[in-house]
Length: 374
Length: 105
Ligand code: SF4
Image (cartoon, rainbow over all chains, first blue to last red; front, side):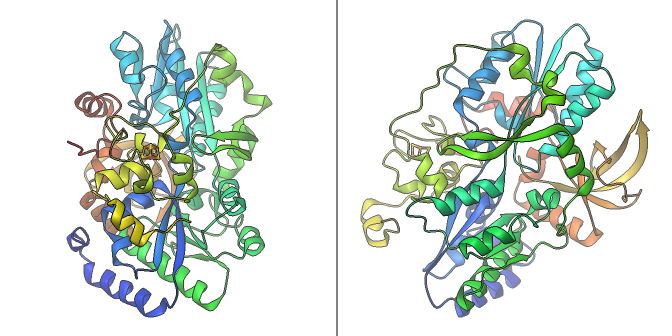
């Protein structure tokens, strides 16, 4: 709890936590889907403010973590080609592929750039007509409108030298995959606030209904998270399973219509492989037929990529919420942020990295006592 | 990568056919696409993700969120320019966690 006192509203937070304590009569397992929320929870010690039985399970919502190794390898191969300017967000730079990372490609002479926005990459394409400019577009629904606009704009400007290496993943199918997994323990979800600010939350009531789980649209700040957890607990205790919006100052029911319109024009739903989880049907977006010529995978046709994952790594179980990172035998030993074996340790937003960076080590004896997985 | 940061719209311009704005994030000013928030005007607050405004918000919410994100050390990482982002990566050992939050020995 030492971090929370830094916030001006530490007192309100304490009161919210007290209400959760007063309400919770049974153990509950609640998943926050978004990696940004995982970090805020761990960093602010929110999980430690909760009653012993109320446990936060960390979801698959870190786009860096779930990006398949194969796609990273494709990115490295494209970025290494002469005549290519490869643009990415900063957080993809040190993500290791089978051989090195983008930073090393740059060290070997590749033109790798970090941009703030995909529009910067479009500008680069306009300014460098003799080069091929590729933008590495990974992310959830939040990032998709930016990528959609980049190809749309490239088309309107007649740019033939811009393409997207794109792999979007979608939250609702991931939630459904978690709920369908054998041994699922998740009883309620905190929905990612910023994903919902784009998509709204009209997609979720059928899921809440079908699987009888409460879902609460939640923000990223300590108070938002406590409020989301509180509302989830209240619903669980009452046996309700509704979709609630605890982030109404940012999120509306229908979301951002203008963004959704362009998304529908540019992308189509496709099966996606999630690193550590495997293929989830209909769980991602790719460029549709009308925009296929802007697809870097088509343009560069990189062949012969065989990615290998470590057999020790249990990031799939971590991402599904079946185990906590500290329950993986390699955690903190063979696997650290400096030498990550798996997706969830690679990214700063990943659950394993979050546990590591904020010192959440649990000894074997402690584990035996508090064992949560069966 | 999923974080959206609130800022105040200081200027709106048309860049060809898209609506762009200068948005101030507690002192750092960035060029931001406003096409998805046609209702936003100069002086309004909006939350911005990777250079795109996605939702209008009120001033109080914006200020609180900025203060919280700053306290959590998230603001600098999100708004860093190319050079800074590269410098951050250069300082971290190979295959470290990409957002630079790694404090491992
Ligand atoms: S600690 Fe490392 S090896 Fe274990 S699940 Fe997490 S990423 Fe994989």
